[in-house]
Image (cartoon, rainbow, N blue to C red; front, side, top):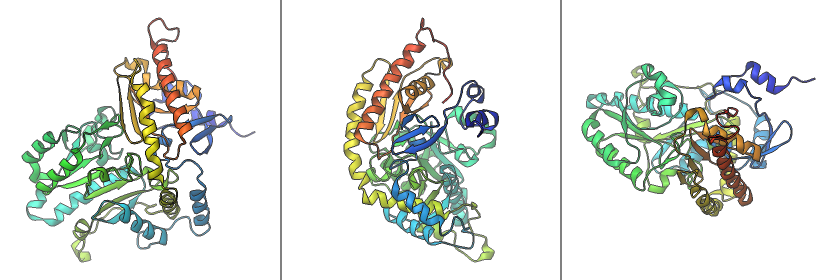
Length: 441
């Protein structure tokens, strides 16, 4: 008989962002198949994918156009390096990304995750200033936002600001300057003071995802762009989470007509099918790396699977689906429906605040004893009711696939509301299960 995958998991796997002691005390939920907006476990039970399989699935699982593109590509070639070689998919995808990106972004450097996309932007910004020389060589500092999250490699952690995730590694990190999210005056104060030392400012435009869906006030991104221009500082926009329709436009930057110097993309770039990331930058930055071989102005950075042909094929098909199905246009009424549905959730006594931009939602349950693990309680209650959600502490995050139907969206929000009520009730003093930790999500 085939080995039990749940037992193999408990015997051998180490899961990300998971306290394995708790995980080992419960049987894991093993997903075997997926279809549209649903995940299906080994026993055939269906769950609405309420977080787009960690914010990356766009049009739904097993979309026929993306499936077919991968089948056709695998019949041609699965992988070839881009060190010294190229291939049609990478070249075409670069051109199409440039065509839909904010104006001025003309060059594409591929990698394989959001963290590496950010790492590349940081290194490019630093090296660019060093190679300009003179007073620019002083530009070695970076400004980031408090409660920022840009990935888990050392450079991206250095510009992160979530102590729970990052504090342990502080001795390994380079120093950065933290600005208050959404506070243009604070950013102005920092750049007025040390602007001549700053290589780049990095932000998640409009919404800080892993910080708990922190929504910036209108005009903030535009103000940061203007401050960067005033101080000759490069602007890095990390759209790993916000890109590909999550905020209601293809890229969040569009909503304030901001063109950054670097645009970091991943997650939804392949529709949620394959690992792929891209760092887009300007011709000015690109030209700063040109020179004779003996000048050593090359950007010495690369990944084995840079521009993987299968991933590029998925990404090209993803962009085709955006166009053919008018995904952004058809998303607008669903955004309006989601806003209406969340009004009832926000009015519930268990909910402190609902924060939303487009299809990115954070339902804040307020302060609770960490031992209660309120967010995980909600996760497990939702699971019992047929939906997969994932919390950030005591904030329940909803970020469904853009292709979710109106009926499925209604079900997801209703399940979430019921799950919040049940989770809070189960943790109340006198409850028969109060203080009992649910399984780790």
